[in-house]
Each structure stands twice: as structure tokens, then as C-alpha cells.
Image 1 (cartoon, helix red, strand yellow):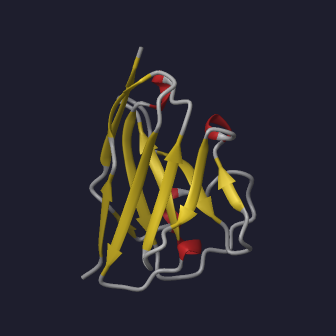
Image 2: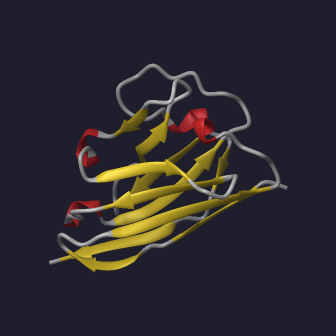
Image 3: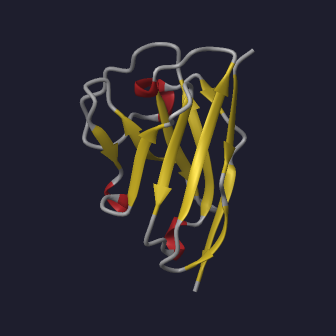
Length: 128
């Protein structure tokens, strides 16, 4: 059974940093088929970052220059380094994965429908 477990969330002040990690089990996912999403209170879930099939790092415009996605040193893990956090970054952060190769050519991260597996999320709260 596939399981995705996020960790690293917490409460920080504006300008602070957090490092999120996602550990997958039950299937050997390519880092190119994993991504980070987030959902702020009262808003739709949105893509934050992904690693494209062509190796490019894909970010939502709102996090470019502040967040860095990377494949973990341990196989089947995905990290998200978040710096310069803002109050608008507050939300539940989810890891997503799919067994298939996601050939995405868009500017931002692939849409939710591209991913078949989701973690339970880790809360990030940024306050001033």
C-alpha cells in the first residue's frame, strides 16, 4: 500500500525558514513524479513545486526565489526548503506522487489530477 508522509511543518515568524520532507513507501516513485501542494484556509489546493521529467525545477510564481525543491538523499523522498516565509505561505502542505511519468510542459507545477497518491499534510503557519 502506498503511503506518503510529510514532516517538517511548524510555526515560524515572517522571514523564517522551514524544511519539509516527504517519505514515500509502498512504491518506488521517481522524483519527477512527486510534487508539493498547499492549501490555505478557505482556498483551493495549489501546486507549489515539482521536479519536471526533463529535470527542470518547477515553481509557482508566488514561491519562486524563496522555495527550493529537491530529491532527498534517501530514495523515495522529496524535500522542500522554504526561506523568506510570508504570512500568505500559511497552510497545509501536501506531498503528491504518481506511478506514471508526468510529462508536463507548463510553467507552473502540474495540476492535482496528475497525481494519484497524497499524504495527510503538514501544517505551516507563518506569523508576524
